Length: 473
Image (cartoon, rainbow, N blue to C red; front, side):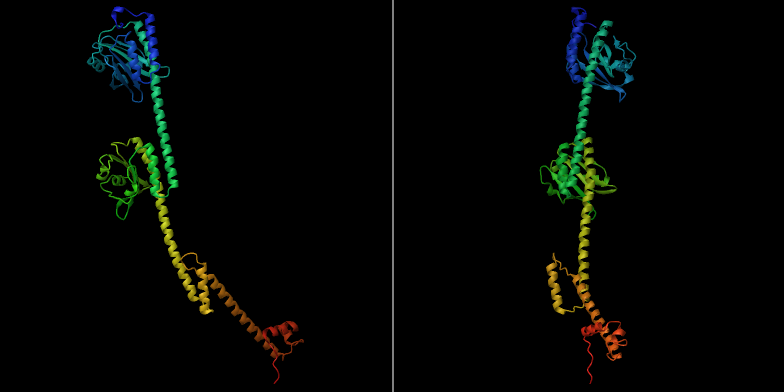
């Protein structure tokens, strides 16, 4: 290794530590690899001769390495193809944790492909050092030159100290990126859960489909910007999808309600038939005329029953990412249950109305039968009084005849008939006993004794029944 200006001679130990301190101060505030390497190249240029500096990062989940290279002639980065860990010199440095000095790339035979690529870029010699922290292996740091360079042990030690600082800085940058990615993921999950909660609340508070779709579209807009949302249900009679509710930004969604969508040849129809989510870029003519460039059509399925589709449209092409599609599908699964419940409520309401009509019919028939069978002892006057009372008691448009009063009247009449019959039987029995006793009331052989009562009781009963002894002729 030589200084940038060979005429100045080798660097002193103090100059090296000053350069090392400048590197440390430069990289403490770096948040990404590009910023780090721009500062690194700027400070090391005066103490290290190199034409190219490269950062190789270990990708343990893929079993390989990725590399980015900065040329000193410009400040732009070049991304190199990934290599397996055991496929090039950087992997060897990472595995062995030893620095690698190659004074002549043409003479190095262990990694022919990598050496050939370095020679294609004009690199004659290079030095590669491991980047390692106390917690993990980061990768490797390489310095390449277009001229032969000889590295002494002191110079390799100095570059090793530089590599330690760079390893900590890169590790911090990677941790910062990971923290930001985790924060974005948590924010996405929070927005996802908030959306599902809002959709659930909307399903609880909106029994009608238009209100439900408006609420869902409003909640979905905050996570996934879109132009319109349409809910279509399958009509068995026509074999088509019919729009029952829609929400749109630039127009009145109610104008779409009632529109029929063929199952064959439409985005919603194909998703309904396939029973899976489909994305469309080349939309049908009406959507294309409205500026819709992306459509996500999701089938509404409960169990094995297909109810219809929920379609979301966007003005931008390729607007729906896998994450946004997964979010829409999660919303649709909840909407499908809400739609199934709404349809069930509608069927129950229709059935209840039908049963109510049949009940009114049967009740009217029962009333008519009771009226026909009643004897009407009071004739027309009693009938008129009953109808007048029914008009007073009826609350709706249907005349409610108080059949209970007819029963009570019939019971009283029957009771009176039975009472009159008993009195007649009793009177005839007393008269027969009086005749047999020659109208003698008292005494052991009198009528009172034969009837089992006192003489005074018999006299009282005779007066009540109007029984009097006939006068002699």
